[in-house]
Amino acid sequence: MAAIEVENISKRYGTVTALDRVDFTVEEGEVFGFLGPNGAGKSTMINIFLDFVRPTDGHVRIFGHDCQTEGKQARERMGVLPEGYHVYERLTARQHLEFVMDSKGVAEEPMELLGRVGLRDAADRQAGGFSKGMAQRLVLAMALIGDPDLIVLDEPTTGLDPNGAREMRNIILQEADRGATVFFSSHILEQVEAVCDRVGILHQGELAAIDTIEGLRESVGGGTKLQIQVEGVQNGMLDDIETLEGVEKAWLSQEGTQVEVTCSNDAKLDVVVALNDAGVEVNNFRTEEASLEDMFAEYTGGSR
Amino acid sequence: MSWTAIARKDFLDAARSKTLWGLLVLFVGYLGVITYLSQGQDAELLQFIELTAAGFVLFVPLVSIILGYKAIVDERESGTIALLLSLPHTRREMVFGKLVGRSAVLAIPVLVGLLGASVVIAVLFDSFPVVEYLLFALLSVGLGVAFLGIAIGLSMSTTSNRRVTTGAFGAYVALGVLWKNLIDAILLLLWRFDSEPLSDPPEWAVLVQLASPMESFERVTAALFDIDIASAYTGAGAPWVADAWVAVLLLVGWIVLPLAVGYARFSRVDL
Image (cartoon, rainbow over all chains, first blue to last red; front, top):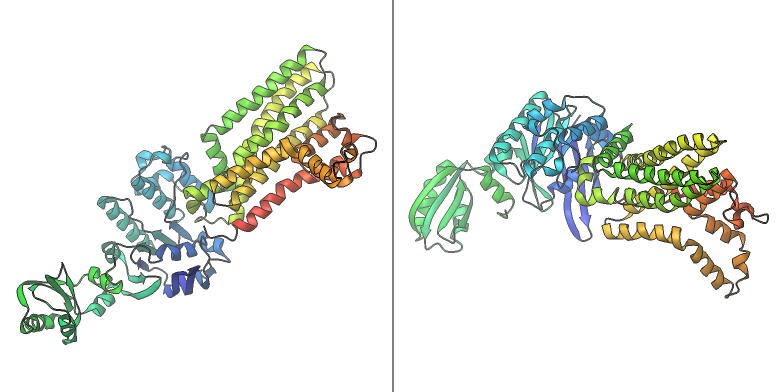
């Protein structure tokens, strides 16, 4: 059985379309990255999983339970770090965990969980005094209670320092090793790149791409990006470049002084030669392996 | 039982905020003063009950409004609801848990106060009607829960904190202070300023007047201890709608109806 089945989900607010016929499946045991710029509709989708938001069309099933009609059964198997939450100011970290255990009908050792997220020292402090990062760690600990089959994390590294982000990544990997399915959203690529088996890219409410990291990288081109320092580049030239064999995409950056091209390894020289032939002065160039960053920019129209 | 987790958390939250302790001081203090006052003269149990009821009818509803009106709207405004409802709780369980948790915050000070007073009563007075006294305690909590129903119902119906506040305290003033005047004004208008129905109101007007939880509370208290507080209810010519059981039903209605209306809205909205 699939962990998450999203079937043709649309959500409209009046004339604004937040999600447009989104359709995908996350298999059990996968680590799935849900990527997109802010405002792409990622949180709306997760809020539909949680039944905070009701879709205009379509269904989502989590382990076969419809999120709207059987939300409780769906959430029984989930651990969640939602967006836009706020902790209970007067309850301590420990009491937060006890509330979750109470709610899920499980008993675990609070100190062990707090140790795992690095909050051991704050166990008996009221959460009202927590920094954003501490609150984030606390809610992560809450999401881990009861070894849920599906862990949903909405922008989990918000408010965390680089160290905290790395710990978050390790926890995601540990949970995946345990056999849990992990679904997490982010607008930062590196995080997704580092841990995900598969990635879905959401752009303006539509699923722009869904594939493995390798698959996406291949679709971008042979894995090379050229950065060419130029003078005198004209409009239209880049279109000509894109017609070259092996070239995926060419665009201008840095106020017209740099051309960036994603292409296969073999096409690199052809690009430089073609630019030279077109009368462009090539001052310098360097190559790098195409990162997801570029791919992301490409799928989302560079609007980051 | 999912709602028990919410009720427990809510109760804990209130205990942490010192609300519970403040209320304990308030109720125990008030009842202490009354028992002290009642002992001086020819000790009369009725006098004690009358004074207690007169105080309760004013501040039990007020305390309930304060306890209840932020129950849902605050969780929505602050975002704690995102944590609560991402757990396996339905929205209905959330509301029920809140009602139970806050009822406990109200009931404990009321009951502790009355229990303390009962010890003094048992010593001071010759007879102590235990059953009636227990029913009166239950009735006092019932009055509070009715206003919790109103407050939580309002709390569910909108995300505007200001509107909930206005509605909740407005309800308190309308039902408590202005109710009789409102009905009199309506009667006067309907009868074109003939004052005769004011002294001999039609049955429906008696029923509407009784429909205020405060009036219901007083009516049942009167029935329990044979106090003659409102002749319109207990006089010889009182209509059947003024029966104490009608008052009990009306009180229960206040617990259920506002919650049902508020929930109908809350259950459908996007959070």
